[in-house]
Image (cartoon, rainbow, N blue to C red; front, top):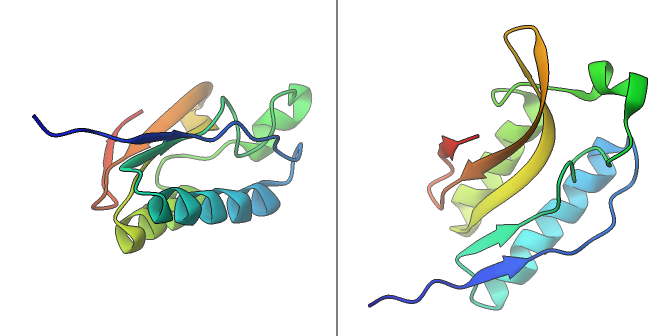
Length: 110
């Protein structure tokens, strides 16, 4: 039976600062890979911070959005899976979602 190593990223995110949080995601993915992890799991709404209130509309993006696309590319390059929380815009609604990206950089589900 193959073992699966999951890194739990218990980190504080910067409220409303997706780009700064994205840099932390990349660094954490790289550190987790260096320690032999197969997947890294981030906290709920890590990409934007948790208390969004009225800013949720402007911070939400689809799974095809720019930042999730960058995470997919990083996952593929590092060959590490990632589960990342973010406010998802889907069919004109906003969801508190997590995207599951495999080691090939493919979205497995949300």
